[in-house]
Image (cartoon, rainbow, N blue to C red; front, side, top):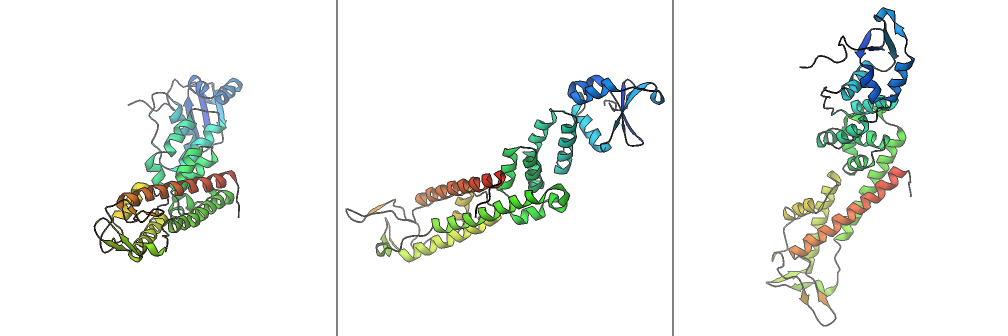
Length: 303
């Protein structure tokens, strides 16, 4: 077990935090990590009340200073932070004292599944504020208003601005409206009379039954989308497999049916065709999400 590196006797400079808090540290370590600290040490004068060691007054919270030092000092295992407020505080003090090594560490933590699941709204706010675009987009893509309100960071309004919250709510609203519209329109089947009876490879489907099946499937996907807007093909296929009952004669085994020289009919209840259709829908939803998210993050709010 290494001794606490911030109270060792061989430390050659003192950081005074508040009236009572002190960190006895090493000039060389902090100078290598931060040009700001290096400049402070050059200007520091000996403090005879501290045995002649130079003392640097620090106005930051003691816990923030301690956290910064634990990420800077060699041989010290830094804590695993899952709290987004603590990650934000670490970025703030690292930026103040010019410690560039902290930014990639926090960026990696914000991408961690545990942190993202625990406080997705907090991840979005911190990542967006500090320019971690990829992490901000990942967090925003899975957010819904209930998830935002349940997120720990939403309980502390001082952690975010009204503009940041408005941008996110606008994105979620537009993404939700457009997504549900796209899902329902994707499953609108033609009322062409030739679809009333579809001769399949094994039996005859009723066109009305097919339409009813896809309308039910669409609403189940809409329900899934409202809970989890990151619907991909795999999740949609699960909804399909566990979804509404197929038409009375079952799903069609044939891919297509020749209905004449100028009319080639694809049976919509063919499972392979349904999966391909879901793949196409997932791609369209993803494109729509990216479009609205990009506009929200850029500050563009079209009607």
